[in-house]
Length: 481
Image 1 (cartoon, rainbow, N blue to C red):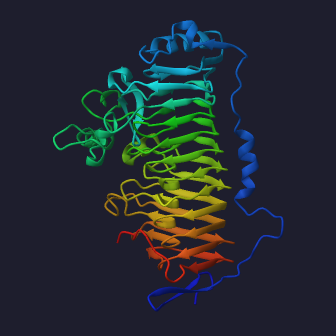
Image 2 (image 1 turned 30 degrees about the horizontal axis):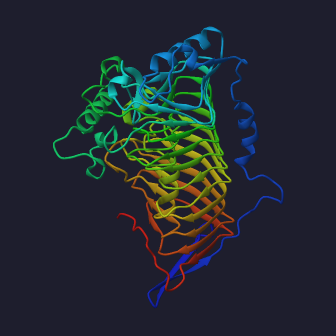
């Protein structure tokens, strides 16, 4: 037997899966010593600093805003932001009440402060998000509808407060564009598919971004919050509801803090927080209850992602709670620029509607190198598929020349109460899935054997795997072949 690998023996006894696990005793750090990889964390945290703002307030009511549930306050908010920016910074304050608005474009040195008891409701009329802006849609750059809150090439910007941001997307507005019959769409009605395919084709052919004009008639939903090519960003305290698509999506940004945010949105592609081609990002003390991935780290799609060529790196996720979602912390699938140095710690993940705790997804068109991913002290309740999923058969699978890579992944002090299996890993020849380490973990209520395909080294150190008790309902989700 290869001593670097675990030995798994599965016996079927009275229709119950019994796991006999040979534990590996590998070299362990001395007591009190930080595991390699985690030693970088203090240096990274020291670089991530929330922006500071002058003690000046610009109330939107002073610029004509009215909380009557009828008035479109877009122009009043724009004027308040312009005045704050011209004065070299401060807070644009949204007082208690319900305020209708269209697209909000942040400027440098502006903190959009949504007070406790205040709700910004974004009018679900696509015309309110024109003219077109330079943005990214599923990892491809284009000119499209403005995100609901947008900033382009700005610095020192924030969204803070205990108020609520409500995108007002539902099965009558925005979400039907996905083309799902379970959310308002009917056969023959418009949907995004044609424009999505055209955008991907433009990215593959290197059509200039200025010529990739979408918007009206294309049905590509805008994301909720998207700072683009910006730096020194803080999003703190707010509750975010009902997004057309991804919720928090910084792109090509540096020094980003997302803290104490609650995201509750169950529409299609409603990811919670998607840092994309960003560096030095801290996501902490947040709650995610969403219709797609809770946190999805990305870096561009296919040829267009390689053209931009910027990795996501130095991403820290800590003290977060993940409820419903396709995955707790995910890397991909728009991952062509790569991801490195991701740290996840002290999180809780638990929902019968949460599919995986840690997930990697790519394919041979997407490619990308994902490396140096560290997870520790994470408590998992129930997940529907597996604790760890690596899916290189995602969408187009092995069809393409760009072989994806996942390497140097460490899962330490992770516990789970119930899962169909610990690992669901699907690679293909030429792709790399290697050096995945489980250390000091306890996985209970495991229902079935692991699914492993085209995998390199997987090692275990002081790991306990307990089968589901006889007579207990499995209610599991089978992995796809």
